[in-house]
Image (cartoon, rainbow, N blue to C red; front, side, top):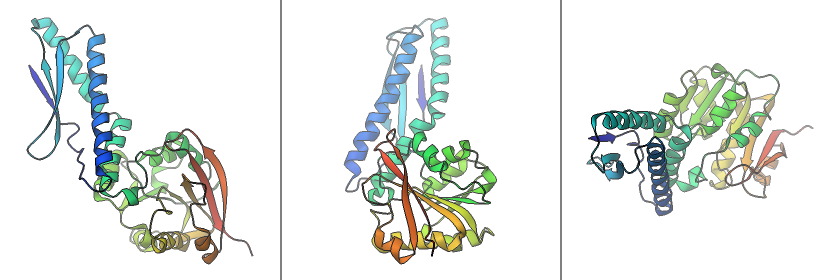
Length: 285
């Protein structure tokens, strides 16, 4: 008996300056997934019945192959096969595993643009969602990634029809569309936010929540992203951004240039790494 699982075929890492580290982390995650599957089978009574191998296919995809390591009678064979089908389904349906593997692969491609080696935690997502205004028509998320913040916003009560997610990576945008049907996923650069939203009939929004690493982007790029956001934000709209460092996520010169007032709101320790949530508004005269 041989079961080949292509469920992780999208895990593809291109080696760049930071690619070696990401490849190690991806390999560790794959090994952890295989170990979890093996432990589950052992607990079901098939101790020592299986061995798992990870191989690379002709197209570069990762295949998980599970083999028998010993003879099984018909009843044991049926039980093992049913167990493996269940495990395969559960592994495919694990957002945490899929999010981290896909996020790491994209970080390896563009570490400066992604800015972190792990998606934001649920705790960070809840902290950012708590900064949304009481009333608004549209909330825009910048840098959807693998959807960890999107999931938190929806769980906090943001309706799918009121949420627009902007993501510049085509692979991540496609992943988000599959994962969040009903949410508008816009492929494009946040520097051109007014144009992107206008194409969808949106001229004004009430809130922006950003996962973009503004501090690690070129200064002019970060400045354009913030300016574009406030170009479509209502007069009392809010811009919510988190940072891993001690400095404000929006550089002080940018905030001064755009007449913005920002304040740290919440410190989230249950995140990798710990983060601080900031909220920005237009400065009052």
